[in-house]
Length: 343
Image (cartoon, rainbow, N blue to C red; front, side, top):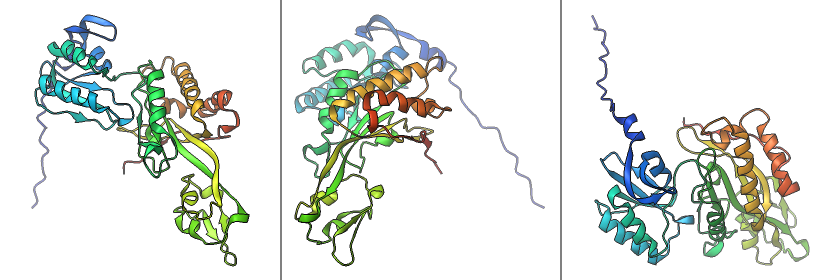
């Protein structure tokens, strides 16, 4: 006769001081978020000082827009980490920031002052525009189409730290490989080129068809000249780079725009809402999107823009709002952000 298994209750230790700890204020010898003196842990986190589980210790997050930090600043960051980080190492976050863990809050002012020697700012957390992330772009990457590093600096200088309803992440990818995961950001920009074909100069060599990984180009059985299916094109420009006679040329060039993506426990895939926007249009897109987000997020607490865009009629309203600055470059229709299944 089999015995029925009896489920034993789990022994769970609850830290009853956790809620009190989150609200706790500490006396900090530094000005953070415009406040000096007693600052609570939530404000410290917003300012880029993240409370660790160890008593009195924090991780200090440094700005590295686009994952780039000049050697002079990197040397100083290593020096500060060695002096004030009690473990003697730095951590490179998934969003390209450099973090110094195990810093005692009594040393914040010293850390800030020493980093100022090389003009190295602290990053931030909380409900605001974060430091933008990016790949290397067209500067030296052979796949690069857009100058992601240039745009990252412009965006960081103009929008970093601006308050929003919840965290607001921006990224730049230089091509459709999308290393910077524009589809998982609140707002993402991806380099894109639409190829134009010049028939007279084409010799029907079929190299472009071989170079296209999306099967958007098929060679004509008789002439070898390309038959192009535009709806399959990812705007990577591989055909342009491969063509030996320059028959494929750059047509429309710019950025795809994605909105409403996010990762985390319940990730969203952000849809494309505009195509081939130019560099100088990007600040207007960000400003317009944040404006719409603030208005439509009123009274909803800390809610990501992707969640709001999934509400009835909100995506259509956002597209109409975006048309005020981009006109016909905005998609006629777009799906709301979709769940990325975990299983």
